[in-house]
Length: 311
Ligand code: VAH
Image 1 (cartoon, rainbow, N blue to C red):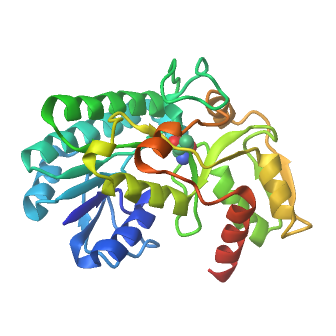
Image 2: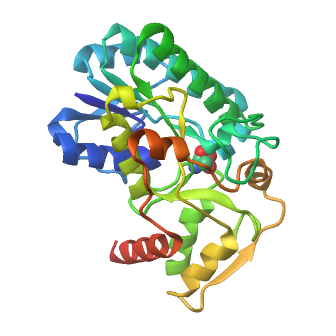
């Protein structure tokens, strides 16, 4: 059985779908803190609360998962509103799952990191795998600490845990979950429905982004790679495309000529975005397990608009 914790989230929704395709829905367990009115999985659903060790233990006991994807987290923007909850959920959840994976001999664990692990003193262009990291969002330093724990459980206890530093993810099958990059998903819905969008990030805020299809493909490539190819057990840098809200809006205008974008002043998420890299160097992922993104900005925008229209 493959257990996906956070199955109703932005990534989880798509990961359950991809894992069902690969392994069959009967072999995937969709776990989340509550049922969802909007997210429909073909896989069986299980209530899972990552802050409740007894509940997690019962789920591991029941399913004896061979793989676990721990996607449940509080993201950057919500994390600044609820800092202690974000730290507790992100950290306790990870450590409970790492311990249970050891105890129940789970073959492989996936846990997402993020470009949020970098901070104001990290190099901001082509940010390398190794550099100064002084993240100043709770979400960011919970992901940095989590990377340290993942590497520790691999080196000290031999747990096969693998991780990726996801950029902002843009998909049409699921809603974003309270992050700083969420504007790049909302903009498509607003462009189609209202023909206009007010970005909470300024026009020139360049951030590393990726189409969800690329992110899911990268995740399965990482998890299916032979263990000896995985040389980084904290989390791999992963890059797709970097762009600004203005560049994204201009690409959307090629499809929706009258689309209007405006920019909010002084949104708290601007400070978070300004502490993050503009672009990422993912040489190690390319060298170790053959990573290669497929979506450029034009392809991402066309794919998003075509699929959202059809939806
Ligand atoms: C967030 N979408 O904005 C997440 C992600 C790199 C961004 O970590 O918090």
